[in-house]
Amino acid sequence: MIYLYHCINARSFRPLWAMEELEIPYQLYILPFPPRFKAADFLERNPLGTVPFLEDGETRMTESTAMCEYLSRLYGNGRLSLNDKDEHYAVYLNWLFMSDSTLTFPQTLVLRYSRFEPSERQQPQLVEDYSRWFLARLKIVNSQIEQTSYLYDNRFTMADIVIGYALFLSEHIGLAKYFKPQTAGYLKRLKNRPGFQRAMYAQEQAALAQGVSTRPVTELDFKALHTD
Image (cartoon, rainbow, N blue to C red; front, top):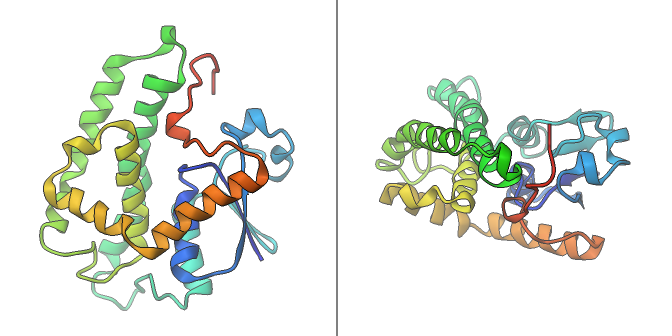
């Protein structure tokens, strides 16, 4: 059994969505955010105190994009991945790495310094700068989606899950209003997928069953809490 530790709508949504697309059995644990402050026992499993955290036998993973590729290759016969024989393999890898380092990371700074920090530590200029930085990098997605339904021709892959999550996050922090029409349409297609909808339902039901708030991370207010 695969065990996934998750906060509502956090980056851990990537492997959750991946498992629903691949129809892999799993056990989902919903943690209060931020888990390193509000779930002390979790630190015994993951000293970083972060989500996602995936356990699969002796395997332990903390990186959401790596989890998606791992799940596809080990449990999905690679059907949502590209391999090194594919002529577009390098481009596929580039999407995977871009998803967090280029598209999700700047949004976490926007989220932290506009919502999570107390008023004296908020940084409006940083928020504006990294919002612009994110939107500038989004041009490559805008360009690709203008030509195809998914990032790899018309085939849905893990690249769509990991990039799609970055777009989903944008929706929750107010940046999606700047999307080009083709990018907004792409996100809508992704959210209409049964796998995405099952993942949304699964996290809500698990939170209710485990007595954890169903409010997304992006809607929580931690201005009085330092998260360094």
